[in-house]
Image 1 (cartoon, rainbow, N blue to C red):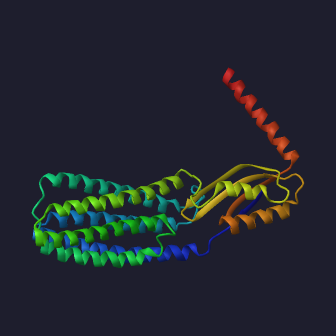
Image 2: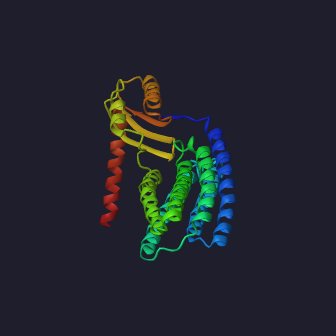
Image 3: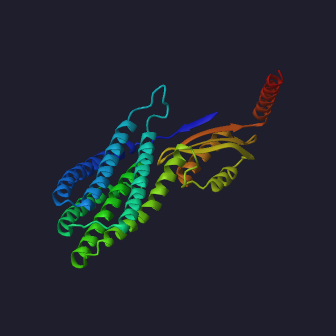
Length: 314
């Protein structure tokens, strides 16, 4: 068996950078959460207290994402040979689930309010929501550059972005309510935000679940990958092709190449280079087989099947 194991030397630096950005965003969010709760109690604004509850989920999501990064940096050990990188995916799944339920709650609350719109103190609501929007925009700017690199960071970014949209909605609603006293506008905006958040949350949930189920990563075209492997000089067939991801960008591949007449060393080098440059897969395990190995494996499998059948009979 031939094996190759690549290593991304920039991973530690990227992870450290993510942790620093999450720490700043968490500090900003927690500070405003305290301000918003106090303002909501003073102004008796249910809208602000509801937004504070959403802000609390943001703070919790950022804290969980930060903790996941710290845990994922632990080295592999005898019990967890792949290390702890999947903690970031678990955090992304948790954040997506929490955001999904918050969006459902917003829609439910909006349904309740349509029949009895509460009286809203628009001026206090406008001031606090404006401060919240500024803080959320700063946090979004901090997290945006790494949102595409990590599902964990993407989950945190979506949390902050949904809250920024909530702040925009509250500001627009406060201005309209101040001039028209149409209290139902607040509910309408809440529904729009809920419907905007839900599909994006669903995408993040699907991506997280796909990685946890060891599905083929979305960025990998499995048919093109199979075609490129078969196109390698000397390869007659392939089997046991497995592609999965440990974390957002850590993709692994394992495959058996049947190449009885190929130069194994050259084939191995060509396969590794093609997988790295064409498909972006650096963690690769190859097994190059010839007729003798295939025959041996077939006999071994036949013996195992007979033993299995025999045990079922008795």
